[in-house]
Image (cartoon, rainbow, N blue to C red; front, side, top):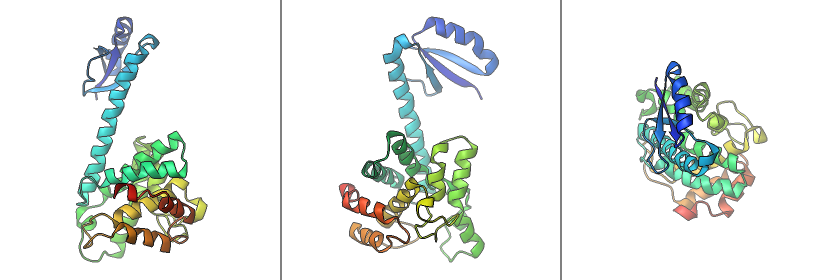
Length: 251
């Protein structure tokens, strides 16, 4: 597939890259510092002298990639007939939870993006199983239970959001070892995955879902987290989630 690279205001670099681009399936285009980023551009190149212009172009590219990620999350939500903004709501909570836990900047970025793709493995599940109203068979339930591992494998195989793979894979593990897909226990579960387990449960309980009637209140969802603290959920992270008021800030 043809890839297009934009060069910011650097004629010499543009000429050099253009000469080398043809044999590699690349098209190189010139981009003025104030020019909007064309939708076909995959990357931006600029010399250090044009650092400000390069930064502006890079921000445009990053914003576009973020919109594509939100679009992917919306597609996953709609696949299960959730509200189209369900994953965005999880993301808003994830931003606050990451701060409360004290994640580093890089860890926060990974955690926030994982919030959007946590259920991407469900794209591999047939509609007649994913949307089934009747009781699932054993084989069907096993397929559902494997969606975290499928999602992580998909992200890893495509080298896409690979840093989120462990969170995606383990966000249905329980603190007492009763979760899936591997039955990990306690601190054997990555910290961010333990946090995502809490976040995913809270947001699921307080959002409308196709498979149940009604929506739990924030108070009921927090009560559930307390009751399952130490079994399904990391008790320290539950305490941080509740005491930080993360849920109340957006309800």
